[in-house]
Length: 295
Image 1: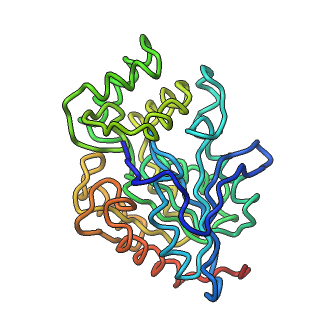
Image 2: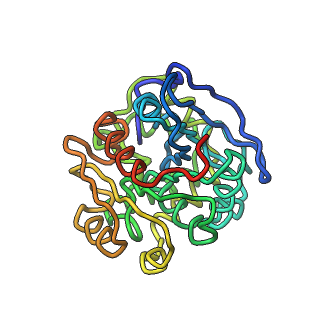
Image 3: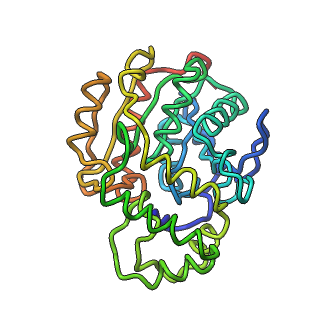
């Protein structure tokens, strides 16, 4: 589970509900820094059990490079509403079409970045329609299903949600002694005694966690399909990742003819582990693909 240092938007950023053709989505929207020439707009999608706040450390350094960044809670995720128990509402295609609507509402074309589960949803959106996007960055997001150890963690979460309330599951996660952090894990223990993390957890809809957990455990390899899309790709990860081993990410980058970045000192969440190095790598990739409609 990602653990942003703060849930307070960075200076200059604004939290609000983005209205789209598919409903409203909670966002943190950070403008380009004062006095900096605008270079483009980016849409940032968080991972499983994460939220838009996971990108808080990236907003300021990317704003200073000329990029407006809009981080989104997906349907049923933290502060974005969604059905409590209808898993069909969270089918991957439905979530992907949400992304297309978000890009339109933000005022594309946009650079698209997805972290972990968000990367696979981003991929699905691009495969439906790549025209709203200038590029795709897959951050700590692999070619297919998550590793066996992480599948076991997701299974534990799904089993718990079948018999416990969200509050009870939170208490169980805090009681477990398994300090490893991962977006895919859901049931990692040793959670900080932080009310903001608890509030985020309780904001998630159970059906969303169940449906997206299944997706993570059963996602097929769609890299060949993605490679046929005429977009530039960037595969970025930390130097350690148990959710998708680095060798898989290296091979995916080769198949996509993508830029490959490994952020030293980071694990599954380079956006929070090493935000400045991560922002430099992201902006460097975007700088080579200028926004056709400077805003």
